[in-house]
Length: 432
Image (cartoon, rainbow, N blue to C red; front, side, top):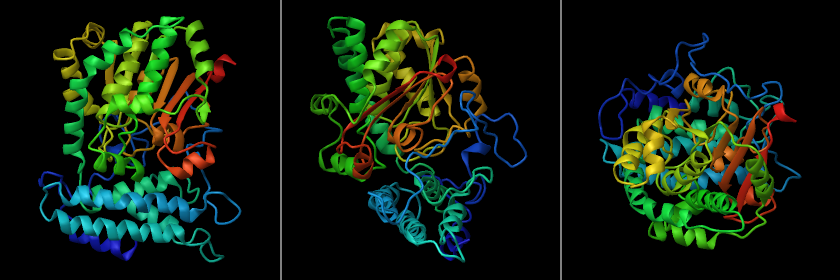
């Protein structure tokens, strides 16, 4: 264990949640796999399992890996720089969350994660093939022993960052207040968004609504406080303006554009059940993915929204969906489609078992695994779940990935621009 991290664990061994209540300790409930949906574990302390539709013989979650030093457009140092650029905003949120000693602990978080980034920038050597990266990431993040080390990458650094922030420094959910505020603002705007969708017309009204829902998913996904570019837009631009973002979206073709294939498949096949892995709170889930789910419901599809078990950045959690978003949809959205679907269970929320802004589909909750067994459509939304992990992953059922690109490095590798869009669609391998 690195010295700085070890000092932090000792100093904050009691741990604190974001409102100041003591937890069971900084090294107590380490990861989401020990919480939530598990009905037992496989002997290594992790209750999570693989999504049924993943081919474990070929699945690799991380899209842009391994990180190299030479002869590549985006070097290891540039990838690490993506994480360094976002760290100050994490520290600011932590310092101002109102918890005891928040400012001191926020500074400790920044020092510790900077040390992990330093280790990940180190070049390999004969004595230590991965530099100090593996030890630094795994000590900080407590990653599952079943996940093989593939070198430093976005999944490893996300786990390390969240491990330090939550477990060592005790910030269980330092983005809670901004999520709550943005959820409330987005829910107020939802009736107008749904009304505009219902008024959408074209040569085929269903196709036109589907296109509008996809564009809405892109626009909502700009509310991402884990990416430095979107943090700057949010903090200096006065918040999320959904309608303005829709109007400014990059026109087709997008940097990854399978929308025509998706539209044709949806026209021919009415999916029975979709499991939709959602991303951020606020405009993202309320104005982007709720309307998308509603459109699927109109087509006769049962929809299960899968959200994080454990808070990470401004990602929505399953508890927040069930306790805050769904009651508001029933009571104040005025939309009969959503109200009736929630009432009869055609729209529901489950925990994905995840605790990061990216996702490894080999480690999900039993709850979402069981829900997905009879699903014939999987949707992965957001840059973390649908681009930086899983972009090229092939599943046994139809799969859609929808996201906005908010890292210049990702845009460069996809041949696009910052704020470009990704609509990736693959027919399930069982149907090929």
